[in-house]
Image 1 (tube, rainbow, N blue to C red):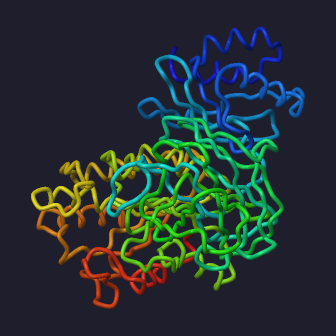
Image 2 (cartoon, rainbow, N blue to C red):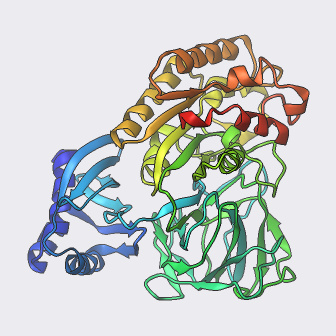
Image 3 (cartoon, one colour):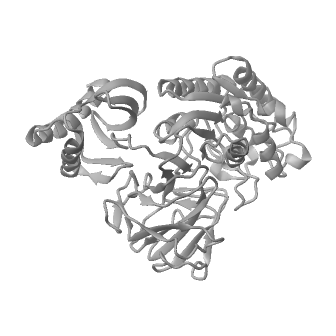
Length: 492
């Protein structure tokens, strides 16, 4: 059975009204341990739970049927496809295979009017550039994390991820509140988060899910604080290594505690968060995909001075407010997978870009690690940078072309960004500078992106002292501001 036939069979499962026939189809199409997860559903394990969800969906959808529109891309054991629901809706989803059966699905019913207001890229638990809690996980602890929304809305939901977990994440309770600084939240704003109406819930291993919506009015640039109480051992935690934001940890259940006092431990990573969505936004968000230059390395922690944050503020000041979303991972590459620093961009593109709600444009700022990490193989300051694969500009260009094609198939506008200077850094050698020139020339002159942000020219041949965080590679706060100021807002 080829990929198209398998996806069609999966849609047949969703379209089948007869429970007995549907169960027979499931045995043919789904693995016994299949996981279904969707922003509008909790994570579901096995055939019976999914069959119940399909039955409930039929009551809402009436006679409407899913049809396969296009298989957009297939990468290893994962495929992205576009579906149609009668003439009422169109959506994009990802399916993951085990042999000739479906094992995991992020979900089908993504048509609820939500828009992403904040995102981050999940990573496997493990060592990174700084100490973190991902390998030890949590037990009888409350984790309090603050994120800043680039757009506001009338209500919100929080997306949680156990994508790289090996056991179910048992969430004993969760809450959201308005931030009051450090670990404190504003009294009277704490609201309970639930899934399917239940304040305690589980996120299956390998799955993402969203909480039920709560009425929680927010404006652009508002910060919200999310607290989770994890009573049972969590196992190693799916996380985002370089948050450049302080996460707080306290012993016991501190869900409704408004002060900072119990939260005596801190980390510079985010745990189990992948996004916050809002209703009432314009739905024309901008996703920025990349590496540490997107993640914000070199900027001041707890100030939200990353390139995407500053671009969002420029759009607000210009009275063109749009969500600007961050899917950067420090050390990430276009063409090379890393056990510590994420799947290569072409692999994570489906989940980190194409499956995000309310996005119309993708900016790609990626490739400097591909062409330069190999140059420090003999004197690497960070073991997590391995493997030190030598990659050519032509290989990176092929990866960019792949992402452009998939974005266009999903009706997204594509904006390429030339690589800023690295001269004077450990990454800079004659070979890597030549590859950077080749890559930047292609981004700038090929016409393959719909538009180009020329950061290489804007930032100069070498980072100016005021723009340099000190390593001659990563910008300072002022350098990130210069990057955001270099963007012609009309090309977005």
